[in-house]
Structure formats: C-alpha cells, structure tokens
Amino acid sequence: MRKISFFVLVVIGLTDGAHAQDDPRAVVVKAIKAQGGEENMTKIRAGRSKLKGTLFDNGREIPFTGEEVFALPNQIKITLVVKTAPKGQSIVEVVDGDKGWISIDGQVKDADADALARLKQQAYLSRVIWLTPLLNDKEYKLSMLKEIKAGDRALVGVKVASKDQKDVSLYFDKENGLLVRLDYITKNNQGREVTQEDSFSDFVEVSGVKTPKKSVAFQDGKKLIELVVTEVEFPQSIPAKEFSKP
Image (tube, rainbow, N blue to C red; front, side, top):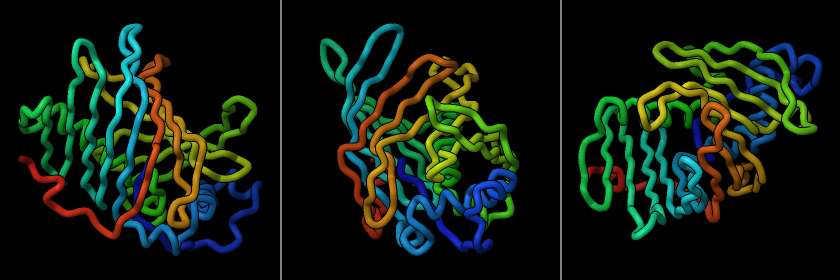
C-alpha cells in the first residue's frame, strides 16, 4: 500500500494494449506509468501511513487503528492498537534488514524464525509491488498469467519468480494499468501455508504517485482484514532509530 524503488523505461511505445497482453515487461511498464511515472517514483524512498480497519477472526470482527512506516530497501514498522475486550492490545512488528523484533503491550522480543520469515516476506512483497525492481533487477523472472475477472473488470496477470522466494501473482486493471490484486503463499498464525489475496482500490494521488486508500485481504477465501489508509505521506527519510529495538 506503499512500496518502492524505481525506474528506467526501457521500452518506448509499449502502451499498445494487444502487445502489452503478451509481454509481462510491457504490462509492468504500463503500470509504472499509471502509478505516476519514473520521475515521481524515484523521488520516494520512505513513507508513513495512518491506518484503521477490521480484523476477522473466527466470526469476530475486531477493529484496530495503527501506523505503517517504511524505508527502502528493507525496513518496515507496523504498529497496531487492536480493540479487543476487555481492553485493547498494542502490537508492534519490525523488520530491519536481516533482523526483526516484535512488541506486545510493551514486552519486546526478537522475532523467532517463523515470524522473521513472515516479516521478510512482507519486505520482499513491498519491493515487488513497487514494480520498478521487476524491470531493473535480474533476480526477477516475469511471465504472463491468464486474464481473470474481478466484478466487471478484466485483470491482466504477471507472475514474479525469484530465487529463494515463493512466486507472486500480480494482477493489473486491463484498462487503466493499476495494480489492483496480489496473490501469494504465506503462513497463517498457526504456521500453516495458505493462499493470501490482497486487493487494492480507491487510488489517490500523493506526491505525484497513485496509492490505494483501501485494501482487503483473504486467506484461503476467508476474509482476514479490511484496511483504510486515512493519511499518507512520503518524507525524504525515516530516522534509523525508529526501526531499532527498544
């Protein structure tokens, strides 16, 4: 909902719809242009968003508020205040390069192997959905997926493969080029592998870049979270201490 690193448009004139449908790089180039273009995207190296939403857990709907902070290439901090009864709970999760830590109601600990793997996957997904690394870094292998439908909208798909990472499926609105869905394999809170689908909508322009205000996530077809971004900014940098373990 943020996510970054950017670009050289190596192909000129690839906005032709028929050609883009057959060439995954052309699909990504179109998406980059739709999202704001190389010049605007390359200026962004960090972001801060205010969040609110609902978690869905075994029939319960649990509201939350929070903040997400990122700094390229591999720092993310997510802070949530979950409004559970009888009292709320404060949760902080951080990945800082190869390290990670978690705080629950002020009790801080290093992330265990499973939690660190999940946090690192989120950092990886952040790079992928910022799109330009897909054109500029040789580690990514792109291939076309079958076109699908989301309501009355046609979506063009691109699969992203990378060494030591699970494949990621990106789906773009065929008409406007925006990235509107992300599918990938991850582990749930019980450590079981599940298929997660993240959908993005209600795009707004901030600092010349289109970013989604709303997202919905499903795991194995069951709704996991609904999220609204209430504020977003892209500062020049985030102090390193913000990601440091207390």
